[in-house]
Image (cartoon, rainbow, N blue to C red; front, side, top):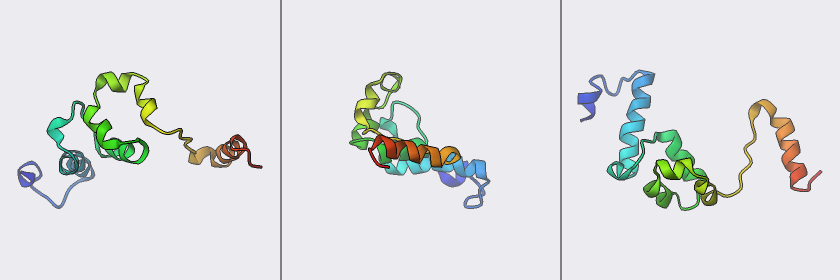
Length: 100
């Protein structure tokens, strides 16, 4: 199957590599046929890292869920710090936490 889709495997271009991990790596981690929406490895990793009960979320993931605010209930409160404003973002989160 892999060689049919990627005849030069394991020598892949960057684009082929991204396609490969989004197709085959997802399939090896979850039952791909149960997905109601098409997600890639970055989205899958985000769900694994940041959602409560990620396996349950992945099984129920659909357009309705994604377009609602319901997903917010399944995530803890998270503050992402951005590299381009790291000092200011860190300062603000420390103030929010009551630290000087």
